Image 1: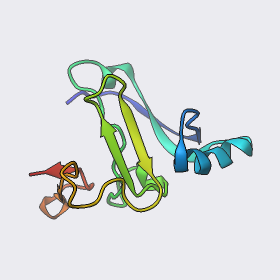
Image 2: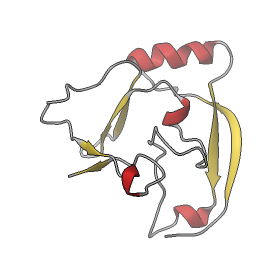
Image 3: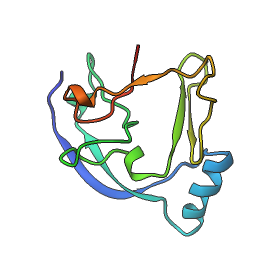
Length: 125
């Protein structure tokens, strides 16, 4: 793993290209002159250098001694990440799920927290 500096800040973020339900919810904040007020880490270039990189912040549940995560500060209930297509997309759902639980595209997750993981990483068998 890489070592480097992270500066934690609190500010507003917005999603100018959001569509659908996400656009309606986030757009309400933007029309009021701001985005979603979240805590986020600004990473040093050393942390994002190769080899390595960083997690995308798509973790919802964490122990209390772990810094806030993006999903943990929102009402997002599900997400779908498409890295296979030419246009990479992240779909966020604010209500219910994006796919039925038994859909062939849905991957059952394994919670590693009982084995000492401090956050609910998305692990699949």
